[in-house]
Every structure is written in C-alpha cells, then in structure tokens.
Amino acid sequence: MQITITTRNIESTEAIKRYAEEKIARLQKFVDHITSVHVVLSVEKHRQIAEVTLHVREHTIRGEESSADLYSAIDLVADKIERQILRYKEKVVDHSGRGAGRSRSKEELVSTEAESFLEEGPSIVKTKSFAIKPLHPDEAAVHMDLLSHNFFVFRNAQTQEVNVLYRRRDGDYGLIEPTN
Image (cartoon, rainbow, N blue to C red; front, top):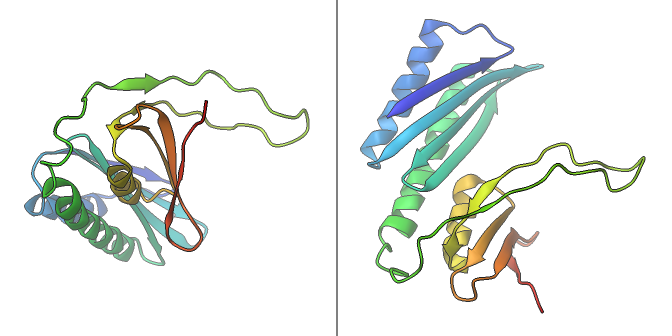
C-alpha cells in the first residue's frame, strides 16, 4: 500500500506524518487490495482538516473531517474511513456474485473546456474526467455513499444509458434517466 501525505498551509513534521501513516496503515486489517492512499492535511483559519482518499480495487473511498486539533481530525477521518470500509465489505464484497454477467468495459467521459453560460453569471470553474462504469442503480448508490457525494454519474447496466443518481433532501435517492 502506497501512502502519500500532502500538507497545505502547515509545516510538515515527521511526528504528524508518522501518526497519519500509523492510523491509515491500520485500515489494511479491514480490507485487502488497498492500492494507494492519499492523505491531505490542511489548516483553514482555526480548522484543522484531514482528508483521506483510499483506492480499493476499482472503488474509491473518501472521507474528510475537521477539528480544532490535527491529531483528532486524523482520528476522526480514520474512524469514518473504517466505517465506510466495513460498509463497502458488507455491500460490495459480500454481494460480488450479483451482476457477474455485466460488462466490464470502461468508457471514459471526456469533458472539453467549458465556457461560461452567461457573460456575467456563474461560470464553470472546474472540469473533471472519469470513467463511467456499467452498474446497477443499487451498486451506484453504494459507490456514491463511499465517495460521500450527493450525486453519481454511471452507465445503467440494464439499459446501457447514462444515468444520474442523487440524494434527495428526505434521505432517499432519485434517479435521472434519459428519454428519447
């Protein structure tokens, strides 16, 4: 497992690096095949922030926590990632036999440079490219939860159409499907 630690707005000390590495290394006892981990430690005003992005097979698990103390922020994010790993094992690994016949081919969604919609209105400030995987909507919900996002773009394994899964204000999920 490769652990990369990045610091922003703080001086990187060996003690804090060692502490973060020890906390993250403990996660290996919960799941095999962790390919890489990226830890970002930063300070914004009086908040100490710890972000962890974990790559397990083809899944990405991400967590972010903040506290008044950087060590406690690392503890909080490690606990959060641990809970997400246990949820990952329960939902994804234990049900790996489901959907075995689906296609594994990956298609990439390539975004071009975006222009602002209005001359003086909001503008697109960030563009991301990512692979769209064929998934069932319930699997997409698991991926969305593991990433701690409010929406998830995926290719529906049943219809082969691009769908968007989103979290509703009531806590349930919504699914956007295209029509012809």
